[in-house]
Length: 438
Ligand code: LLP
Image (cartoon, rainbow, N blue to C red; front, side):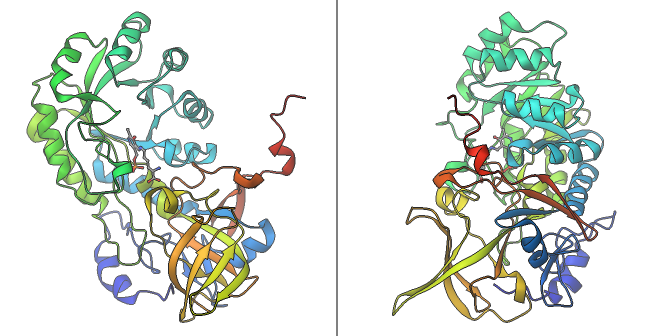
């Protein structure tokens, strides 16, 4: 796809969409790209003021390149949109990287962790322990103890087994608890990332919530998380209504995350102000205006800030069938197309301003026919040696990366104001054997 500056967007919706603080969720290159991405004088794609072709030469590929200012701007915008009565928690599973934890903590965001490992990283990244909340449908006793010892703010109870465990472990002055409810609501998104339905491994079904309310130690409120990457804001109204149906006295109501982001040029998700307004109104209507709110966006905070860069190594024409363009990464750095049929766009960073006219399939280097990153995309005459940029890979890319086929996981590079800094280095071949025991 070309990243021709979207003037209509820039002049119309983009600017009109600025909030009071001057934040526009969409930059000049259109929805999936970082806010400060642009095409520079050389006709190349730039992120955070850094030329991606230069970054590829200096740091190698594949690499996760993040626009640091985009991360900061989104964190600030979310905190501002929801206001002081709401804790915006970074669902850190989306990008569990110490530098990201550090940045989010500095921007006044709270943190959701889903394991002892994420808790370790969140503390290392500088989150005040009382700002951390722990999730998980099967936390181990060791993880619960770790959370209690660290004196985190909240633990989300996911089952009756956990109520029993916590009743024995939790001191009265320890973390407060929320009960996760499976509200029986299904947002429109891929089935693998729907979580609010009754037939789910997550949460307590509606029919058993009253029983859980009677037993939960250190109870502070109710929680639900409906799913991920959905655009229907109104489902949060339904969620608040369902949670309120139990008549429980809640200090805090947590409606989870899942706020959808643009992956493609024509994706126009609701703006953060719409999510915030709807959620605030719904909780105020059903629980009272003084009730504290929590939300847990992961992808929304980090997804569009990240662009993955690859080097094209092979261009293979199958006569009468199609052209395959193979890059030096694939399902090991972005499993989302294979797991959820997630769609992406891409551009040749070297010729970002050129018209894309070649209809190709972009594949990875793994030993799997399913290792297809973009089944069909228009690119600017892709050639061996070009840098391919895939935007909107900031969430669940680094997080779900693997060493499949013995690849070394890519570095994470933060770019801001023309300077690039590596915050996670590329793995080495020695790293691949690091855990070996003679
Ligand atoms: N809160 C809870 C309890 C969650 O389980 C999740 C995501 C979130 C918040 C954040 O959801 P987000 O705002 O990032 O959509 N690997 C999948 C997504 C799985 C999400 C799991 N839970 C993907 O790549 O789309």
